[in-house]
Length: 450
Image (tube, rainbow, N blue to C red; front, side, top):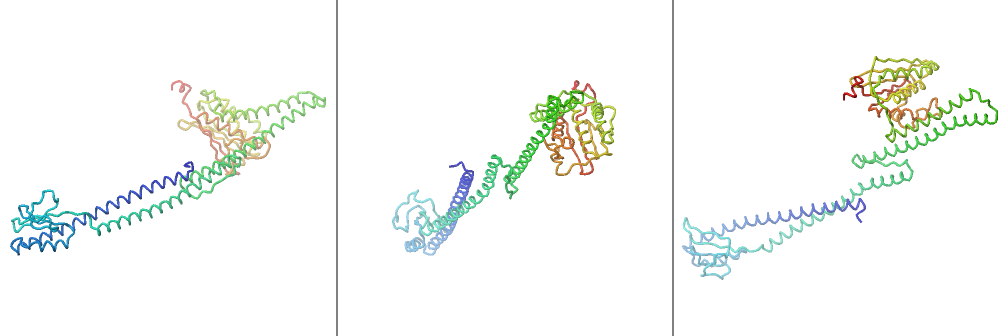
């Protein structure tokens, strides 16, 4: 029964409304009764003072209490309380109920009394027998209490109606999210929810939409990756198969050129497989590094030498700006892989006659590498995804321009595994700048000293 969120919210609202309205009604009733009783008490006190003045004046003008019963009868008609008049010694002179005349009054007969004085001399005492509220007073209090209860009921009903309305508004987007989530679970990643508020529910909706878009993008990238990998595997395998069939049938002579071609195709396959393994290891946090203190300029120089021929063939100017020695603690092989990947990408996307520059600089406790090219640049829509797995700026199937979209993702994982950062700035048509920031050490003994 109470598994529904709306039922739970309604039950909570109802309980809060009942407690709040009931408490207010109770306090209002008690307060109204107390205020009314205080008002009645003040009114009675004034009446009693007037009564005392009436009997005192009677005594002054009559010279005593003779025939005071006539006054007592008139008082009895005016007041609902019972009064008893005694002399200073406590003997009853007159009783509005005509029951205690000429008798001694008991001490506990009444808790209210007024001493009558003529000047400084006591001439008697009036005892008042307090009665319960009159019929009129009771009717007034009943009317007040009914009004309070009626107002409480109306307020409670209004609160319940508002609670029902608000619970519906709260639960509706949650239900929409649940429905969208179930459809997404079934494979429909295009689900989105309408966001009309800026509260926690709205924030949840925005997070859901962002997650849906991300999952859809990842699905698209995975599908493209599968297609790309299949394409990349098909080309070298087809070439290898063709050479092997030709060799088998005797159509191709097994000379050095054939074996060299087969070797190149196997290298392509090996590189693709190594890239996929590196991505999986990085994703699982199992990317092993063999860190040691190294001179960063040596790593950069070796990476530059490995691509000099490619730069020369493409007629691209390759510049370096390297200081004397910048020491970092890193895995030389992995760091070389990253720098070569960035340089290779820069050459791939830079036209003939362009320029690729790599320079290293130190800043406080950081070593910074910049790879700058004057190539085609990267569009604003592509820049947020440039380090995503399987993402390619160039959607073509050619490895020469498109690749499989693994290189930059691997580079990011490697740099982050070195406690560093990699970032990119680009302007379409004006080139790109890739920046690597690594922790710098002062000398080869720093690691051991610490």
